[in-house]
Image (cartoon, rainbow, N blue to C red; front, side):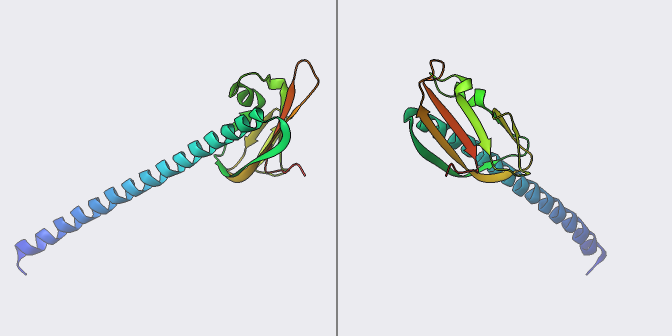
Length: 145
């Protein structure tokens, strides 16, 4: 190979390295986007399960399986109550497993301390209380039985 051919090989190597880095950036962006979609779908399923439970307040358990929650995500009884009409936040109780993945505050807020995949259980039932015609429980990872 002559001198000119050797100089071209270095340039091609630089171009190939730039292309590999560019492809890796694209791959990481796609992975991040897929993860964000998982969180969005899980959150939609979380509130849809609650709405289904409110629509059938007969005490039966409704289950939403394999929901994925991001580290630092927080859910409150106010958020659940505002997702449907006709229920006061005082009528919604939150519960969770005793786990390091959750922090539970006074049965009204659950915060995820790590990314976590779990099943959520819902139960709404009629109540004779004037303020709460029915009460609902949302339980993260903890079955009612």
